[in-house]
Length: 299
Image 1: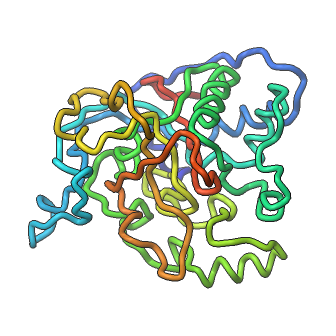
Image 2 (image 1 turned 90 degrees about the horizontal axis):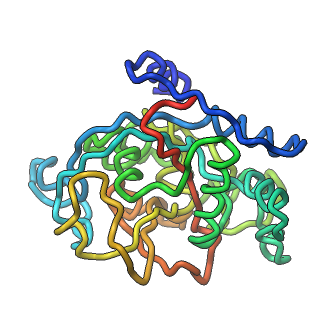
Image 3 (image 1 turned 120 degrees about the horizontal axis):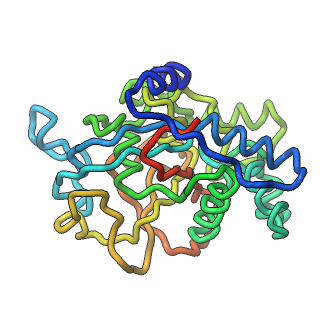
């Protein structure tokens, strides 16, 4: 399903929409454009119940896990309230509006970063910077926003909790059609005259979205979630709106890093968890996608 169809279907829902009053902003055309884009690209995700984690043992004929990592087990019941999630990762262009409006220095200004940076590629940020951006954006839009919880991310990536292995348009990896290949990235860089690497992102939205209308969930970098990482958390996770452990040393990332010569690996599956320090050594593959926490659709 395309994003347009998803939004049309959402409008037909019985859930009454929330009309949000935009917070007062200075006369800043770039900021007003970001606010308008944010509202347009928020995809409403109706809440529900699903089985979170590696669902291979109840999904395939062999009754074997798809990934097998212990931190993706056990499969456990989760019930989530409705929320809205950005169709796209936050780009450098978006993030530059934030730093300018708040009087901060732009990110990725090192000569090496500037050499690799595309304005419409996913912005690389450490965890606190990513959360600060989402919370600031919510104030501009007029509705609370934050990083998604790990459960929200997986529920959305799996099209409201369906047993989807890869968060692509068809749940499969069709290299070169719904995800890039290493060769595609090299050709793309050459055509644009951009010296890049497999770890620097390309423009968002170049490949088909998931049926829910979300882009670049499988590749183009990993995405921060709100949750602290605990390898054993699934064994005692609460059913309703889990938000992860109360404390920890690392945060959970979802998604996958960019292409290597081996293509998309199993780590791109919808149930796979990654962990990272709040200040990773390399932020070029740690990105953000914000959620609006209102349980009603936003107009």
